[in-house]
Length: 299
Image: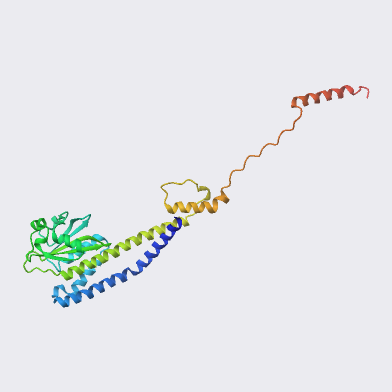
């Protein structure tokens, strides 16, 4: 487990360094590829001045200027008005599509928290096919049409927004209630594709930043000087794997040399077997008495 943790930290650190170096190149490549695709579509469709490559470049650049998911999605909706009369974004989660924001509606604030009927033909086809669906207004959710009104051109467009191989959101667009309203499905599809790609890049950058922070924390733990006497064999269940591994390594290297067991008390030598102390004292007195008596006064 310790080797796997060290390898994972090393991989995260390398991935974060590589991503930081190549994020700018990825952004430029995305813009370049989107412009290549849209120029071909615009030439074939006879695009007008308002839907030219320059406007599309500005729209893609505004989307790529977002640093958070909320900013990127808001930039997408704000730039769909260049190519549609009305638009709305529905977040798909657990099979339910809930309104997030809308543009061009008279009561666009009501889009928020509106639950789209996924049993309707157009939304169900967009989720199932995972591709853009252009359908008659009759195939849209009847409650949505009743609340927000039918478009003048009687045609709607639903585009799935992919994130991590899943449909994370549905983008609704129509020509609006003006008979001269526009609905450029090719430009809208390219904007949604560019948004999906940029959200993937933002997600990778976020994961790389977390991995780099984790690796820096691990290096800080390894470099921190800790007194050997303060190391304990106590294992805290809430201790992080990095700290637990560091303590185990420190104990194996230093504790055997520094934390020696306390020396045992030396045993007292056994006492000699002999006469008791009182008997020796009496014997000494007796010898001194005999010596006095044997000494003659005249000597």
